[in-house]
Image 1 (cartoon, rainbow, N blue to C red):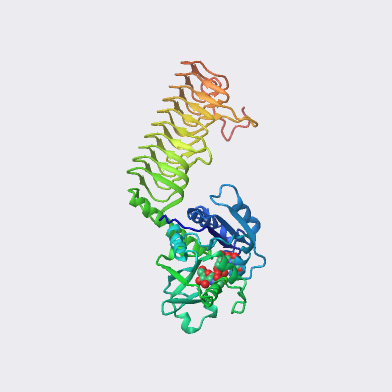
Image 2: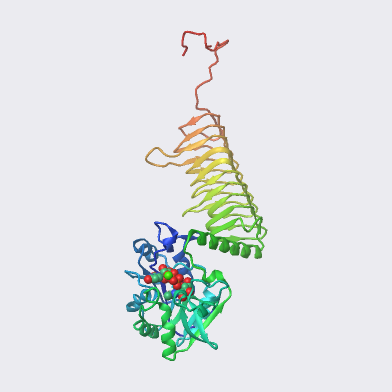
Length: 472
Ligand code: UD1
Ligand code: CA
């Protein structure tokens, strides 16, 4: 939905609460859902509203929360305001008053409610319209603990907190989600008038409703049906439940696009996954960061794939770990990777490359048709077309201080268990005998062998338990 809203929107994110039930040293709003801190989900949604600014109210764990939210790369202008001590949600928003311009609308969000959708907030802002108080509400079968929406006829009269509610009010199933949109100037005047005369001795933000009613300002409610959008997180159990619900939604979205997931309940996406047609993903795979899968890509069970581009027709066999981190990994068309392979940052595999079990590739390019099928390490290497890199061979790329490159030209055959001591170049079409330690570059077409010459002693008698003398 794209509504043109004729007033600036500023976001206030309450994030000062303790989160006692998480029982964690990490502040609650920095706990991760789908790989992203809760407060960052909220800021990402705020950014989609084209908000002018965001003010994050910090308190508990502020020394950890503030560096995160103020780090470069936020899509909107963020500032932090401290709330110390924490005297309630009304007191929290009061702390933002000095930094909020009067000419806009404030949308109040909680740092521990990560899955509200931008469309929902747009609709709430539209209902506020710059001159009304708009509340996001929902019906709960069990509303215990929540603030109840008290209406007279249709008109909202007040929010009454559970602890302050009468038995009759506790029957009300419509609850306040914790999210409101309110004209800033009105908010400021109401906040200056709230008190803490209630069951919890706190300054309640929800008390602005009765002040609005008293001032004759219309109070409107936008009632939604989707509980995930207002679900807050207080405990590891709730965090895990919301994670599963969110993952299932992401899985369903991918399946609607045609992606074939073997089991949507055993799928995790912690970032962005772009899939072309006819992609198949087996169970228990985790995708992180930016991953793109070309047409017909198959990913076997139990793979972890992060920051990687996989071209059409490639097959990633089970238990493969790919992490491109910042430099990325690319896998070429029809390449075969795994099982039990490890691709690290800067691994660039061309078309039809084969990487087999227990092979690690880092910061290396492998041209079309190159193969390393068993138990090998390629680091800082440039590998030509059709190279066959034998079992157990490694590039010794690190001399203890610096890293050096290994160049293996096209059509080279590296035998098993070789050590290529970089910097070194193996000339095109050359062969390296098994067990060689290669320290000097080799000429194209040459056979190079660098190992002790084999010695055989005829009729050698092994020592046995009765021998006194120690041989060798
Ligand atoms: C609040 C609402 C309640 C609503 C519920 C929805 C009030 C008084 N009540 O209750 O009507 O149904 O949310 O979840 O607002 N926080 C601060 N500083 C404080 C207190 C809280 O920053 O001094 C932050 C918390 O970290 C949290 C958010 O505000 O992110 C909400 O606080 P919480 O204590 O969870 O509010 P509830 O009592 O659940
Ligand atoms: Ca509370």
